[in-house]
Image 1 (cartoon, rainbow, N blue to C red):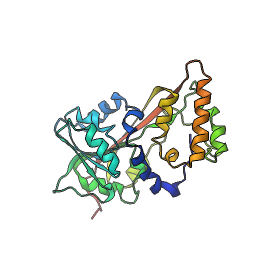
Image 2: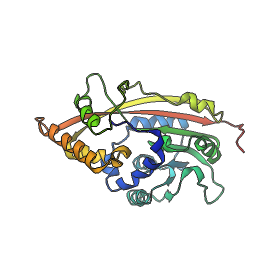
Image 3: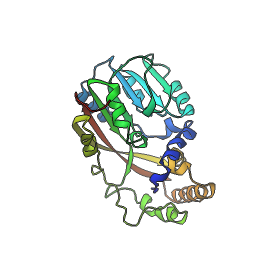
Image 4: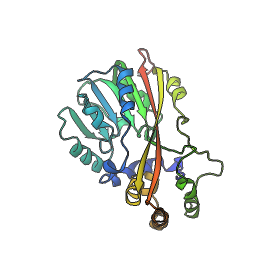
Length: 275
């Protein structure tokens, strides 16, 4: 785990384009149950129009495209745009455009049934992201946000606690009072969403799952994380070398990483002060 300062958020937001070549294979799949709940809550039907914020390589786009939704994806990074277009080429109703969601405008006066962001919402400008989503939604449309986060269950792999001494050595350790993120107990944005006055009927559901990695797979995963991409070479060499050495000492050479996601779905209000 890595501590990241908010001061560097804009620079880190743009680092993901460097991972375009490995993102699709390295990042975990989101649980099917998450998409089932999303469709159930929003009452989406095949052919409905969806707008995805920060699609990256299309990780969350594919499961929804396979359900016959029409999806427009807005992605900031040109290399990720190219990767997403390749991965989604078989779906005629999916369009990937390059741009920043905060300032993006549809080519025609189009409104969407759902605006959603998978592991991207927290990178957006908090001063405008909710207003922009509200403007782009049709009356009665929904906003959905979720992320894939590292969680550590009580009986989880001790590797991640043990490796913190290396993060400390390279100056990327967690604060001393940092609490371990537990499955089913991740914070949510319900209060923030409701406080905007733009969305209501917020529904929150938590999901967790496990993925097993060998050393090569795990280091490839780390190469898709903004904080690790932004490390200096000596930091990454030290960390990656130690991860490889410690996993090589294990009989199976593998680690278990638990993931958690907090699905948050809210309905667009009909009255708003947005101009």
